[in-house]
Amino acid sequence: MPLWTAAEAAEATGGQVASDWAATGVSIDTRTLVAGDLFVALQAARDGHEFVAQALEKGAAAALVSHVPAGLEGSGRLLLVDDVLTALEDLGRAARARSTAKIIGVTGSAGKTSTKEMLRVILAAQGFCHAAEASYNNHWGVPLTLARMPREAEFAVIEIGMNHPGEIAPLAKLAAPHVVMITTVAAAHLAAFENVEGIAHEKAAIMEGLVEGGVAIWNADLATAPILAAKAAVCAATELTFGATSSEYRLISTRLKENMTIAEAEVGGEALIFKVGAAGQHFAMNGLGAIAVCEAVGVDRAVAASDLAAWQPPAGRGKREILPLDEVEDDHIELIDDAFNSNPASLTASLQVLADIPRASTGPCRKIAIIGDMLELGVTEAAQHEAVAALPSVAVLDVVHCVGPLMRHTWEALPDAQQGEWFETADELAHKVRGYLRAGDIVLVKGSKSIAVSKIVTAIREAMRPKTERRGTE
Image (tube, rainbow, N blue to C red):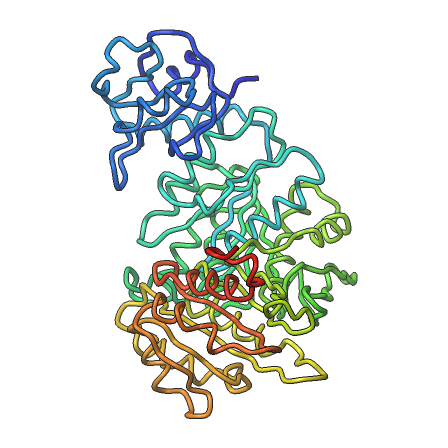
């Protein structure tokens, strides 16, 4: 079945169409557009109307526009509306209204995308599960995810984020979830909030979108858990918590085994053993929350726990990999790629993972952290970065290299024995990183996205490739 017919899209948006067409997808980017998509000409860094002709040439079924682009006068493949973003929201609202899927909303200061992917893996084993391919969690990402929701979807996982007050509630109401989950509340985006309590209130606003009879699930270990509980008492019919303390879903213990975490939990007085395909208690904690979500939408707890084992973190979100050192297969380093983003909570969790990984029993094994700036921390940014050097997990590391102006606070606070190098930019370190690595090293790379420490990950992978496979060689 088509995702949108011309008549349906026009009715949903109040727009005008001049011909009959049918779209099988929705796209906002001509680089990833496939034939049959409805191209949405959003205004971003550039005006999407500049790309409408290109989209139609690539086979777009039609384009959603607020004016007719030059050269396309008389085209029958346009859906003309007053405002493109508002029309995209209207499409998302209409898709939600016609859907019979169980809708799940996920938010949190860290772990949103990983948890969304955990839920996708578990629910896809039970039926047709729809979720965004990337972190589409903002004012256009949420309506886009909804507008793309197939009619036949049985489950949908909607990630909802924010960086300013007042963003989450409208998106949650648009998604109208049956179940919501809050992974954590931490000092992220503090530049826009007075304190962490303000962030907790904003995260709790996801509950305002719950449908009648909805379920709210959150981490009870948080200092701000009472704020979440108070909101749930008003907005949710059912309240469930997960955590290491007193919770309906209680995490008892975790242990690392190779590239996974094996967890023991207790639910309703019954033992529950599960594993996640990544190292870290934080992954296990969010996995437990995901199991709670799945049980809330009717999936058997044991089945959910079993299917969760198939999840692995995507690149940039804690994925561990072994990289051979040139052509000598017995010599290698281990890379932990957590370069997608960073804030105090997620950095603390990642450093703990590095600290907890057992050292090799034979040969040298250094633990090295390469960490970049954490952004949007407001007036606390200097203190938050300096505090990283005092974390217990950092004390067991061998070397810490720092990237970015703010990370200089961390670097200067490190003991001399652990103080590696400090660089203003990721490019500077990327060009030198091979000289800092040797066989047996375990290396974590983490930083906020705009600091671009992903370039360092790329440089490490490139340096570790056999010489005959590297770019520019024969």
